[in-house]
Amino acid sequence: VGHTDMVWTAEFAPDGVRVCTASDDCTAKIWDAESGECMNTLAARGHGCVFSASFSQDGMWVSTIDEDRTLKLWDAESGECIKILGCDGEVSCGEFSPSQSVS
Image 1 (cartoon, one colour):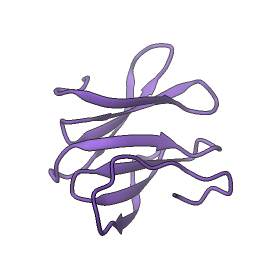
Image 2: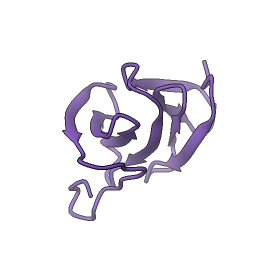
Image 3: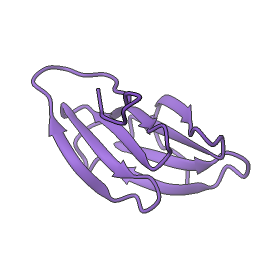
């Protein structure tokens, strides 16, 4: 099933096989780039829209930035939320640094 509200971002994984998207429907999704099939839904757990979703350079992780001022780190394969970081102010996007840390 696709997103049910506006999509803010879409980004290819480094391998070009997957795409992650972030949406106002409180989810980020990981898609098979060729078939268009949704491989995983990363749910923000009802805390508002997901502004940004970004793959790590090795494609193992996805970071999301949510309306609730959190950055979440997800396992791209399992869809499990690994870590939640709170932000003091409004944040609209985030990316992995070349060293694989989140900035």
